[in-house]
Image (cartoon, rainbow, N blue to C red):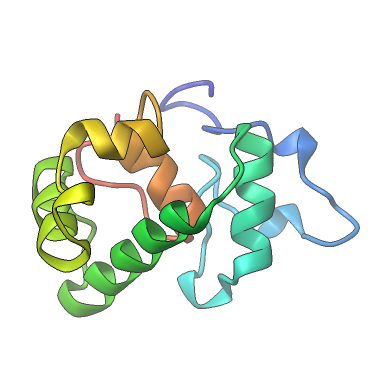
Length: 122
């Protein structure tokens, strides 16, 4: 990840035979969330050094649901509360989210879920 002036993930690892780099903006976020699908999530995760397990997919689905309902990306605190309410107590803590998506959880969730950059992501 290179920070706010560049791409947040290594797009050089993207399988260009299957996925067009033009799908992503200058920071690596999907330009059009309607273009998102599970295979794309897996590819972004692979480029981030993650492997998506069922728990990851539940978090991604919850984030996409939040975005669809409220037409915005949540902050970390709001999202953790939402996870606890929708997925249960096992998901309702910052520590649980960080176990699945280390270091910058909301950025990683947004990238893998094909959603815009979160408001607290610098």
